[in-house]
Length: 341
Image 1 (cartoon, rainbow, N blue to C red):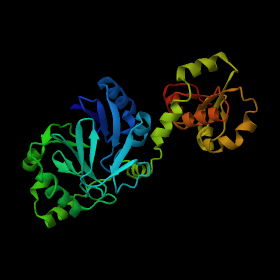
Image 2 (image 1 turned 135 degrees about the horizontal axis):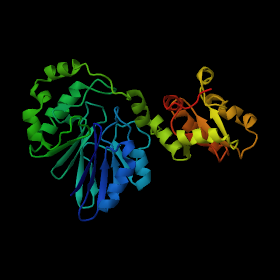
Image 3 (image 1 turned 90 degrees about the horizontal axis):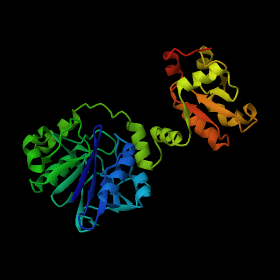
Image 4 (image 1 turned 60 degrees about the vertical axis):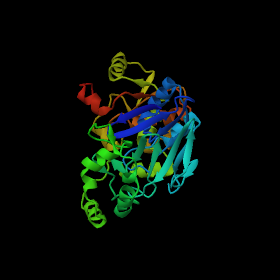
C-alpha cells in the first residue's frame, strides 16, 4: 500500500493508494496543502479516485471540494453530512473499491453526528473519534458524549488490537500508535463506565477552536474562507515592494497612482505621500468617477496588505488591467521608516 502522511500544524491528512493499480484516496485534506497533495499524487503515480472527509471539521478548512474538482474525484462523506457538495454518501459498513484495496466505512458518531472511521488492510483512519492519547471533543455542534462512548467501546476498541491508528489531528507530533496501544495508554479510555465517561467529557472545559464559526460555515456549505479569498486574489494580481514604491516616489513618476483603500480616519492619520483615498467599501460604486481612464496604473494599499490585495483583484476584474497591490501595508511602510504624509 502506498501511504503518505501530510502534517500541517495539528492537522493530519493521508494519501493512500493501491500499489498494483495506482488508484488512490485522499483523506481529510486541508486547504493550505492543495498543491502538496497534487504533487505527492503525481510523484507516486496515483490517480486519486476519492476525496474523503471523515466528518464536518470545525478546526480547519477542508479542501475536499477543491481537490475533488482538481483531481476529477468523487467527494465522499458519511450520509449524515450536511455538505451539499458531497458526491457519495456512505452508510455504516459501506465499502469503497480502490484498485485492489477495500476501504470500509464505520459510522462512529460522537465527536460529530457524521463522524466515520475508515478501515483498509491493517490501517484505521479515525478522524477525530480516536486520537493518540485522547478522543475527539463532544461539545461542538452535533457532538454527543454518549454516542462517542458507544462508538469507542462498542465499535473501535473491539477491532484487532494490531490495527495502525491514524487520527485527523495530532498536536504533539506523535505517530505510530495502534488500537492495542491506545487501550493501554490512552487516559480517556480508562473511564470504562458509560455514565462516568459522559460526565468526564462534559467537564473537559476546552477552549473553542480558533476558526470555529468560519470553519463550520465553509465546511458545511462548500463556500470560501477569507484566507482562500485572499489567496485567490493574490494569484490574479502583481505586487510592488515597499522599496520599489519608495523609488517611484523619489523619481516623481506620474505613471502610478497610489490608492489608499482604508477608512477615512486611518487615511488622515497618515498615508503614502500623494496617495488618493477611496475606501474599499465604495470602490465598485465610485471607481469610474475616480478613474475615467481604464489604462491608468493603480497601486492599492491598506494597513496590512490584505484588503489592498482584494481591491487590486477587484479593479482588474472591472477592467483596470494595470492595477497592482503593495506587498505589505501602511504598518510595514511606517515601520520601515518610509515617508508619511
